[in-house]
Length: 206
Image 1 (cartoon, helix red, strand yellow):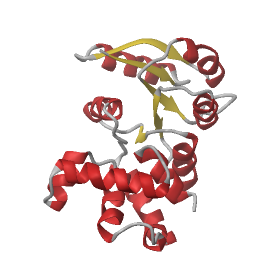
Image 2 (image 1 turned 60 degrees about the vertical axis):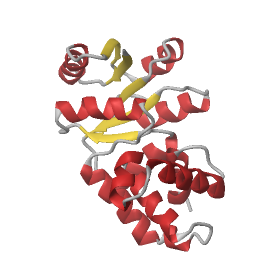
Image 3 (image 1 turned 90 degrees about the vertical axis):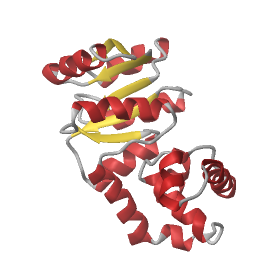
């Protein structure tokens, strides 16, 4: 069972998400929080696998909650659930340590898929969000400017930024999954990072 918590100040949304998760096989949500302060106080003692985190919370916002918890060494994977599509919110969330970013209008089935994906090491994003991340890469020319990476590694990194899983990347480039894993390891080593999220954050921060 994937243990999920929800941090959301709107009661109807909070309860709706909890019902969705508890009504689906393989998922459980026993805790919900209506504020960032409550999450900061109680999350470290719960150790959930995944947290759906609203950004626009009363008091301390969701981005700051993620930043503080990640600084404390939290192993929880955070998916930002929000109405915001602006670049600053997206990138600040990812830099804070979020592993995914979904719009609140995302279909219920996609929310469940995203929880499972982030639990398995992926970085789920709504299609609109993924396009904004890629656009940022292209506008800054960050990937092309990185002389450390080969052309194929740059292509793999772009696919990783879209949130694609290894088997999807393998299909896209008609290569084996182990080849994708090898490219990913090389990317992480060259950028001196440990994960997909850290690689994206490092490129965006350049």
